[in-house]
Image 1 (cartoon, rainbow, N blue to C red):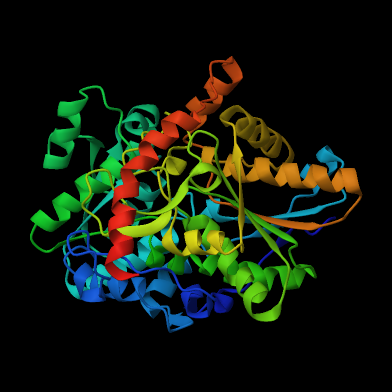
Image 2: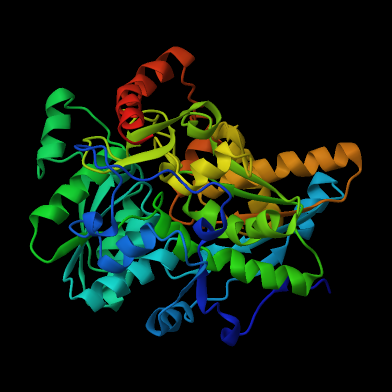
Length: 461
């Protein structure tokens, strides 16, 4: 019998998060106040975020951040998650590569998103916050925060991107089961939503739009804060538990990854699997490659521009230095709703700029073809987002087949697709489309960030 799963005892659940900001050769550029163009301090974020999260967001000095014991107790319900050798996938590909995947789909929410949701709900409870608002694309983050807030006795309101609200009814049901209130975005319940609907009554929404609505509700509601599921530094910090576990599990397997791969929307699951291994590239001279797999229809890393830009459509966030397609960019209605975001996380953007990671873009139908092969060989139906990571993994494994190199590849299975079967139905029926965006269209959206970037540059550089 082949030993496929590498597990750690509950006592091995990490006690600290890893903060890669503390060891980066080039620190990320500062967040800027959009009115003054001056760098933000943690207290500037307190009106929006919980204090603990705001402090973590701008912490560039502490390499290790303690995980509160009540958070570790909640993690123990599903962590550590399995590390699995994908023998059958290797055989189907005929590759000499050794393929491993970290299975984050086993969480109660079905994805990695719960790692940060539990932490953010705990910090809110400790501060005495009674309400959290958020956005969600495909519904994984909304489902995770709905679960976590219920655990800590906090009310939760979720703005779900309208196209996903309609495509993924069972994601809505999951959030409602955990007690959250869900509103399709854009909506008429906020000024940001009304403005967008006024401009385009048939607007199908975007993560940038849903973020605007959630922030507006948070700042206008007493004892309410906003929680984000990706992009920001404190979210990526919480997700580092994935890679910290995987590092120990790879030791049990007697291997070390030559390549680490994850899908990429805002960067949460990519950072979670990558940062702990990337620290060895930075500190110890390791040569691991880190590959972010993003949709061909939303190519912020492969075709975007490093600019200061807003994190939301209405311009309510600080200015963030990131690879962006422009905050008004409207991604196509692909099924990987969690990857339909115009920008990349600030830390990840700096790491990309400095050459510590690379990116590939994946067509929608190619991602589902990879997901189906994975399901038929490994027995897990992956989320549409995770299919992108699988497709990139297959590409690298086939390169090994051509060269005869037995490289070790580790990818993050960020979530399962058991409530995304309508997407698979569309794939099997032949109705699924690939979506392309022209250089001319991208240039128009990116131009919206150019003026912001020029103004920011003259203010503090």
